[in-house]
Length: 69
Image (tube, rainbow, N blue to C red; front, side, top):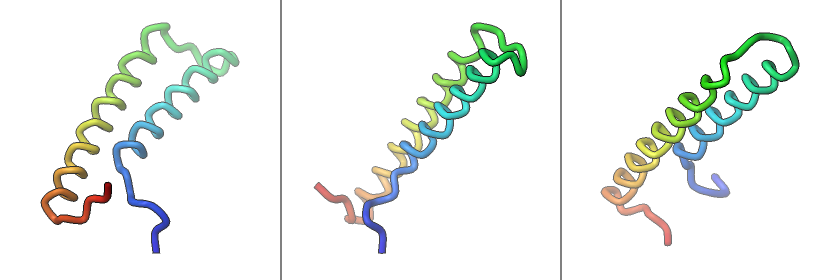
């Protein structure tokens, strides 16, 4: 039994932000060179996809009637 409901938007946002942090840390540590503007599209894309996934999940929950308050 799940302790909480699955939230795909938060999962996607977390994955993209973790990836952005790893890219930044690798560039700061000298492992590779990353342009200064490369992080912004990664974060914005992740937040956009998280919003889409959250909206779809909410619509599915609303339609099936299993939404909690």
